[in-house]
Image 1 (cartoon, rainbow, N blue to C red):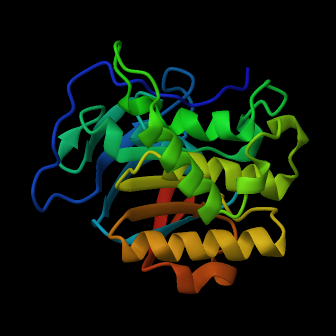
Image 2 (tube, rainbow, N blue to C red):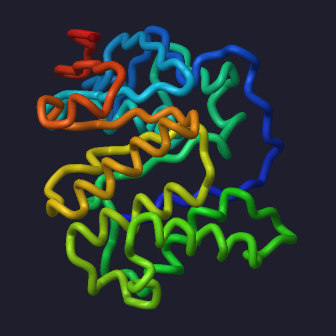
Length: 239
């Protein structure tokens, strides 16, 4: 079943450790079937804070699996993962995962604004509801993605490019320091591509860390500080 990836703040948040990388993986393996067919195999990787890195590879290379482990949505079968020097889940507010558009149920009865506001749920406790600050953040994100005019539109009525911009707006409102973006530039129109590229550049100027899955690194090369190439669940090249 397709679903939205929504986290609620129900446990204590740990501050990042000084000088720790945004993401650190050591001998990480992960599987969807009890380890019989690992989607990731002994992956070791360090993503520095404030960097913009492309995660490059074909379908089935393990890009989405790596993101799901880093977002604490899939338990690794072996190895270690640290986010800003802390264990998985300890810095959950500082990490946001943007899934591929195909993983979302776009027939779900939500408006664009309501979907973007779900990005603020990570800050909600049992006694707090969305307030003016949350709505202000949502409207700012909608404007940055040039979709404020779509705020009340049902998400079922969006084009592919509009869907992608809505998902990115939802990611932005979390104010995360590490953004895991799964193919945000795949199969979008020229206007959306330009807007998303501008957002990625802006995130870098703000000191945010982005890890972006892509099939088309040669078309996006100027956006990134480095590239990590995955094939069959293993890192084959880092440049």
